[in-house]
Image (cartoon, rainbow, N blue to C red; front, top):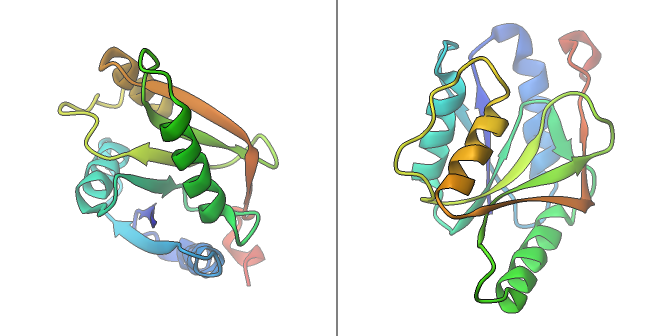
Length: 164
């Protein structure tokens, strides 16, 4: 499963990017990829649109730079959850388009499992948390949002000097 990590090219954060890529590389079935774009007001939207276009499977992971897997089996757990969800979903139940993975701590970045090709028109960032805007858009499009509390990730320290 592809894991897309947006990066704004900040050279001071290269050690953090390397640590993130190394952590995701230890996960079975994870294919980490960097989406490098210049930082601007549409950075988060552009990175998500690119990830959605590059994803080869129906689902993919979009992880913030500082959000790394807690366990090496995280993608296996995600794949099992998706399969179980598809097999047991009632016909009247909405298909999920985004699942938020539970952080070990409540600060820092996020890890999201996204369904490909859900939105035709992506919401523009308005200064709020973009996950909130994306959630509203997918619900409006007829999909659901889930939080998976039994699959974990953790944060890398944001100070680049702390990463080795």
